Image (cartoon, rainbow, N blue to C red; front, side, top):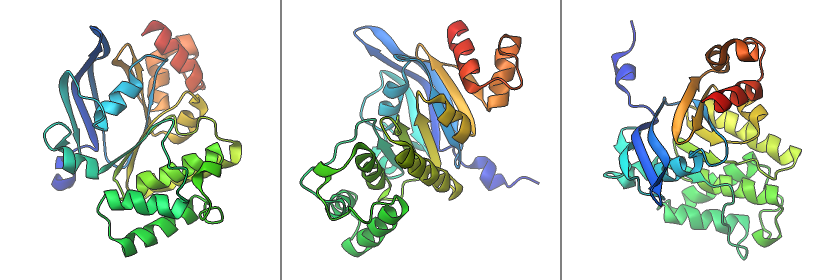
Length: 256
């Protein structure tokens, strides 16, 4: 018999009727999305589809014109502090402080979250080890490569142990070694019971990592499900079984 407590648990992220307009034009148009806890979810769409706008609203960086966003049952608009404590948002071009080294940066971010110094030091050591940044940790971040900066920003996003991690193009500009380190870390993070929502234009990454995929176009979800479910949704036009995510994506966004 199913556990009633589990059935009653709120999703990691629920978006209902979300609307955001710029200069009178809808960037997000009555968008609905629910992502259960413990899932690796990819949000895909063409440029200008509304992905980043949606994620910035979820992260509390933009105010919606209408609709509701909740994170583990906490409304982002009315219970913002509780929602943000459970969330981390990593933009595609994160800001670091060039005159801080990795230890100092993580100590600074931990302080913003009110984490005491001994706990922050332990957590920072774990994250630097996890992301293979121990050796350069004493160097100023202004000398870091793009991959090293991206990994350190990810460590900063994880320092307060959020349950929901939102990533906007996290692998852009990374070399193969750095990209693999980040992907492995994200898979491990989800295995620990956390939730990842990721946008990417590298469809092979979404195909390999995501348990479910939502495709957004013109501010609305046009298809959602596992890759097999998306193949079925696209139908014979992409040859159904065996079609790549790229085939499915192109078909659904061209006809969506």
